Length: 271
Image 1 (cartoon, helix red, strand yellow):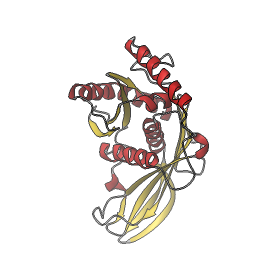
Image 2 (tube, helix red, strand yellow):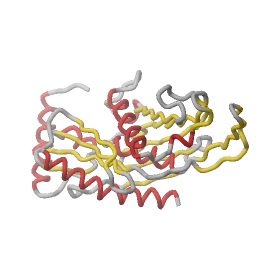
Image 3 (cartoon, rainbow, N blue to C red):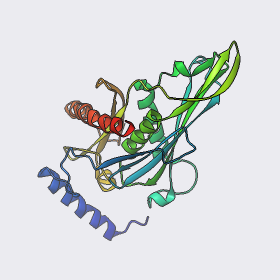
């Protein structure tokens, strides 16, 4: 993208306008400071996946597919299953994405979402172990970004959580070290529903669920993932500028409160 004096001037004018709106408790798209964009979740858009979900968060749209197959456990967790999250931002989803290896943003999103699901203990990985040190069930969650209009962290998190919560996995019969696949598929056992909430700071104002334009102007960003009990199980700070202790406390409180509403929505869709 070519940066010209004109584009810089327009960006500065938009930032001035945004800051003026924020001082009045409003945002450029009409939302309140702590108001999320409309969130919709569609289950099973990918028929051949063990579980899948399409999420629309405002104009940001992602699709997640879960595949479960046999794998070899990691050496440090010989009796536990495997969970791997991958994210791909399609070049058509945003003018800023390019073909080639995963971008830094894609890697960060995958790692943060993976950490939130893993640390919340959404899935008891020990129940996916089959033969200690030799065979376990491996969960691969692949996410494709169809349209990027900001806050991929939350959109991808909701998609992966919904796909896992609605997934069905093959039942295996284990005799000694012999593994036999049955024709029975059972729901993946889920212990909690992690919900991430991303808060951005522009000047000294905190806003929830920043869109693409707000992300371009934000001074700092923090994402908290909570479980069913309101415990914060993962966090990720973005941007170089710091957040004050009071701002972090407020962001954590916002994440707990909004996390409950997000979990209610996911439960309603799955039910």
